[in-house]
Image (cartoon, rainbow, N blue to C red; front, top):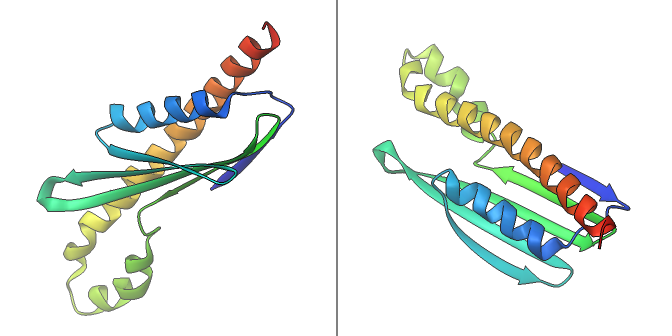
Length: 130
């Protein structure tokens, strides 16, 4: 999912540090990379059963007009492809972990956007008082 903020005058480097810390505090290993016009935070976590969970956060634009894009996992691609077949042949229990993973990412993304909104508001207020 992607959101855009206009007229906030937010230091995007500081915001990027906050977002990276958000992911680290939830057990992800992060790699932050500057790119032309923004930054990308790639995060991975090994879960029980040696599954790897991945999250990518992109922050692009300027302090007064920027977008943040959050993408996690495969967005249920495997479920969409093989779900009906596994149910048909009685192997639906194999997809339980995929459902749990999808639920985890959904909750993570909800928490992420709440966190982003609070940090953007905090940084906008501090920029207004500078």
